[in-house]
Length: 366
Image (cartoon, rainbow, N blue to C red; front, side, top):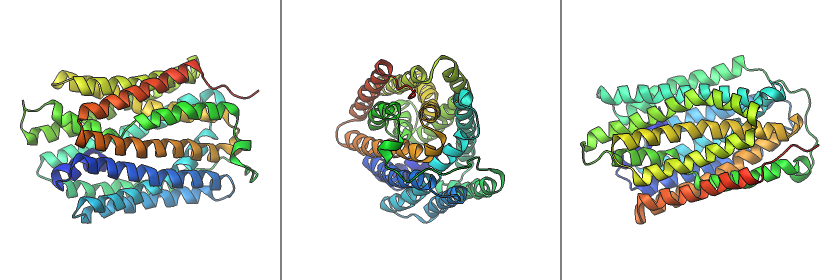
């Protein structure tokens, strides 16, 4: 609900330029990356990692709750960063718990199913946000209502989940712990992260692609509708893509997802009108949860279980640092050059990552 309207709240609601969206998204991702690296490493060395993850969920709710009191866009940085630090605290632990709950042959399906449910929530949330805005609600109305599922989430994760781990890792250096295959995967992951700017920019581009044919007010609703549409696509393709990665191999599916993001950038920079908007929603939706699911399942197949927290911490930290750079660069290019320039840089970098992964796929150590 929040992320469907946040870029519009920053630009249309608070009057900030597009570079502010890049700063908000980038700083949030950067702060999250630091926390992810520590959280993953630390979670392998404690017996109470689930409680740490619950605290992460709670921190996210508190951070997003601060948005109801925002009066200027720099304040959004604080709220968004706090929320994403909570995400950084919980994400490596949640991924490690999930990986330890299934057999290696089903990792793709498990992470694909998780992303399908996660994206279904991201589909329902924008639908509620769109309904609230269409019936006279404000951006702050959306922020207030979003606190309800946030609080429920904290309770459900604390009560229902079980930690499958039975042992802790030894406190040795990161490089000794991780296989060569894992580090080989991190190269294209980092390259893709630098090009993979926040989906918020596609939301902004969606509003531009239907103007001047429709009014500014209608364009804002169309942008929220785009967010809704691409999450619907993601919810549909996540599980089949995870299943496919278990059958044909994870590197080819991940490479195809990287290339799909590059294609979405090309459509965004060259397309106009509702047909192009629909195609962009299809491509953005098809890659986002697939990238997350297959990167996670591939990482799980390359690392032994007792090192999974550290591995996911490194994976998420690299992604976060890449997101920090990509979102800030995209915001600067978007504001001071053109949206086309920002989209073109993303297309080139993500296509290159797809090529590197395809030519040098990582393999588990014997």
